[in-house]
Length: 393
Image (cartoon, rainbow, N blue to C red; front, side):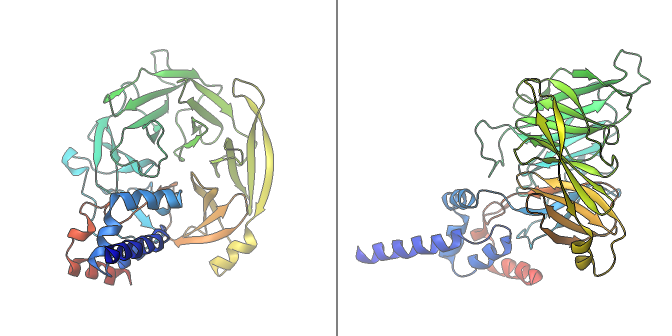
């Protein structure tokens, strides 16, 4: 009896140690699992995984999806950590005859893809488990669109949304050439996975005449989704609770080099590069209708710090994305290096080297731990794990 109590105490102590392994380096969890079968079973245990996610609270950024598809049937993924991913994701789009996949959004551990087959088909994909669900776009929205994917579980902490219900919000701008009364209107529809159906179209008139949405990532802030319209001139606001679609004017920024970010109070913000400086604007709410005034919050100088990471002079800066749940946005310098800029502290760090990309990036944030892959880790032969870890070294 005493021996079993001592064993339980040792197991508890080991569990407390393993609990503190950094989620941003999933490979260290794999290495820990090689110590013995007991450790491998512990790291694959559902109760331990729940504790692990609750302890760390914020899912790490494992990498990002590049919007550019280059004719491939699976989207390009750029890891920023040594991933413990022994099985590649399945070629999910080939059965539908799609010629290419394009990333529309990435949130709550899911990726939203679009492809033409020849109609516009959307796919919600969990890269960790390989689960995916495909469906056609909403009727009446066969034009340039932006879309967002969200977890639809009530009370979810979004630390592990795999397998739960989701919703997709699709927004678009009706063509000026339409003759059905929709010209000059912004449109929106919501898809619920539980009903496998789209809602009726919601519309709002636009102050300006646009033909398209900007394909920068959407922003989820305070129960509201935001999309950039018309190359950065306006913002579409969709209230998830009320289903109301409305329009907000942009602050006076560089229209072609900006993105939506979360403000310090959790509301809407805009970050824009002008020259070698990053300008931050927060929307100050002034009434119950959600209208407000833009406040020029601060300026972060980029040239000196980024030049150090570049190893040479700074020639070009391009805003490419923002990671929700953090205060970090991403800027591409000199066409090939991505930096992360922390908006509160102003800290800048080099994320990765990458070839030139023309559009935005979509950060993929999720816990990846043994047992969340297609096969539990304790069922994977030891030599397979060793071969994979050898490639990580």
